[in-house]
Structure formats: C-alpha cells, structure tokens
Length: 108
Image (cartoon, helix red, strand yellow):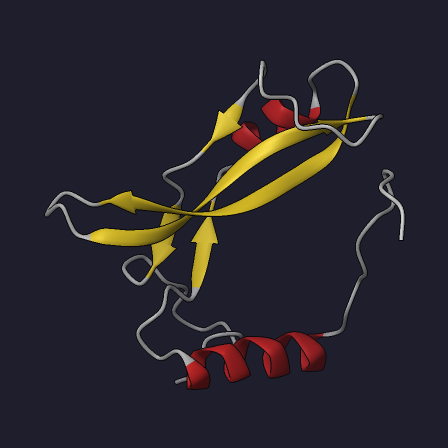
C-alpha cells in the first residue's frame, strides 16, 4: 500500500455499522467518535504540499483532569512525512458527550 491522495477505502454503511458496533460492544466505555470542523480540516489540506492527513491516537486531560482519548491530526507531504511545522489539530469534540442523535453508527 502506498501513500497518495487516493489512499483509504470507501466502504458502505453496512460495513461502517459493523465496524463501529463491534468496537462499541468490545469497549463500551470508550470514546465512540470525534468531530472536527470543516474549516480546520481544510486548513490542514490547504497547506502547500499537503496530500492528506495522518491521525494519531492520543490522550488529553479534560476539565476534571480526567484522561480521555483524543486524536492528533497533522498534514502529510508528498514524501509521506508529517508536516509538523504546519497546522496540528487536537482537542476534537468527543462522543460521548456530544453525539449524533440518530446515526446508525452509534449502537443504541
């Protein structure tokens, strides 16, 4: 597999439901999803030489000093290297607490 602007696989809703529900069944207390605004994503992608985004697992302390899962997003250049001198995002909005009300990707 190689890194390029087409990396990743489009899946159908059934596959997505299967993957997310299995995760949620195996780790019921884990963060279910993360939200980031379009302008933040565009900010990364519009950096000169950026061909995609790499997402790192990370942890962050919340307002109660409790450690919570989060993601770190960073642009990736044509050589497949992280663009660490550019925009790096973290402190995404987690579900729970702010979750979609009707998404089939959330196991109810």
